[in-house]
Length: 505
Ligand code: BES
Ligand code: ZN
Ligand code: ZN
Image (cartoon, rainbow, N blue to C red):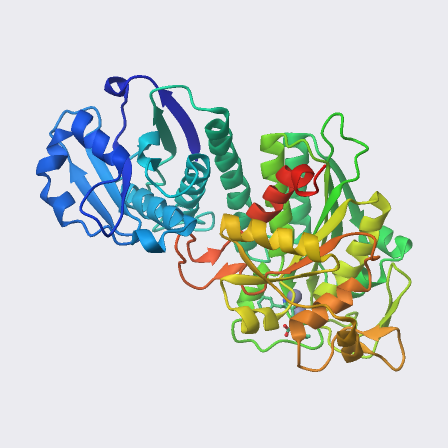
């Protein structure tokens, strides 16, 4: 999606359609829409379609002006009731409006800045949310379709109409939205791709392309080197798979910040989770192709950071492997020596995410990080506890955990905290090793967090985000189409871009 500014007097503006927002209640149009009507489109006063329009959230009305006008169509998009307004409404309305434009096969759609006047939120934030929401709603995955492929993939261009050059804040909001959409699309492409395509090697290739495009440093640890290093958890899972497995390490070290303590983002990259020897039921098992959504979110975030040339050092660590049953597969009862030196008794080979993440977390320590944030489709229990629209967040540093949660609320990736009190450790005590990889059936998401916590020293602020419920949408959600959601890209991007202010430095 290209986002461009068209700056000049309104008489010079040209587009296939222009988008405005309206509320459900109140007979009056928001002030910017009103101005458009009064100054540029008096025909709107006579438009029965506008009079009939309810303004209900996500509903749209298509309003035609006289033939031959410079902007012949207005798409009015509903925001719902004023009292119920939140940024999600802007994302949903813009998404609905752009989808309507897609049905009409319009290439170039405009959003005048004045459309944001009168919304009860900061205009720069409103602009960013509208653009991200709108672009998000247009996503689709067509790569593997050879027929019945819709020919029209637009609108490909959004014009922002303004009489004057935009303020720095508005300019940044539009560039950030464009970059975020690039990252979101990459994450969704990777997480949607089936596991016979999106293998660990495929993720390495995606990382290589990113590194080339944005001058990131890339290190790829193969199984042999992982074994030499002592990454016993990673190797245990990888040994059951015929696909070569890799730990991907990407580094964005902007000039002048090469030696700053980095933010480290760790993403679970299980390209297919059969459960291994503790095999999963076959019903819905195909969904386990997205068990690398954490790694995909980290890769997508790097796309955003590269496009924005963000002035923050960030390192991404993504352990990538399948989890398969095999003659060589690790087995329940096995005791694994992890990179940290801690021993783990395997109770379920289906708790493989923590087995690979623990070594990635340990490896992160060598970079002396300012903080570590991991993101993983870790436990089905997260879905049971919080549903499909809220991810679980945990950590060893309450202030950072809370900040991450606040960031998530702002960008529409909702997080809710769970406690990691030490009493939960009792659930994973082992008779033969330092601890087990699963507890009883209770507190499944917390147990995943408690397990990972063993591998992060208290001095390093660490946050764990369990996206097992939110990484995949079974049905369309507001501005998110059915399928891989890209959950986490916005949170990680925001944290990287705002890290210095977040930490008060
Ligand atoms: N990849 C799954 C978790 C998952 C479930 C992700 C549903 C997305 C949707 C994970 O590896 C797993 O199998 N977890 C087990 C943990 C259990 C063995 C303690 C689970 O949730 O059942
Ligand atoms: Zn599993
Ligand atoms: Zn898994």
